[in-house]
Length: 126
Image 1 (cartoon, rainbow, N blue to C red):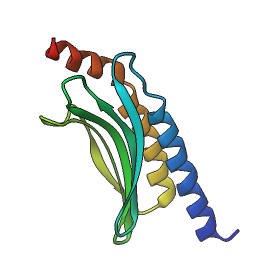
Image 2 (cartoon, rainbow, N blue to C red; image 1 turned 90 degrees about the vertical axis):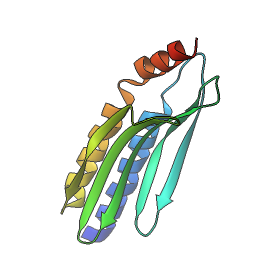
Image 3 (tube, rainbow, N blue to C red; image 1 turned 180 degrees about the horizontal axis):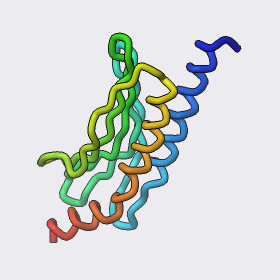
């Protein structure tokens, strides 16, 4: 494989890892489903959506997108009716390999507080 093909394969592998990390998020009292979207013109977002009993959606997601000559990586947890519950700093890299390393890290950082954040939102409903 040439270097561009290796970079593409690395991107697919990193998106699969991030998707699996976030798909493993579960809560015994809240429905969840994983999602993945392409972000035009050249990006992708993966994550898990939780539906709270009151109908609000909570999204745990990471994304990577090509922006000009660089790659931008983001990670966020949002509840439908408010400000982000967790917003990791958007980072930009000239190297796809650096961007993919941060995408892996961000997936773990977004997933880590999931149970605590969902429990807090459930407590607010009661």
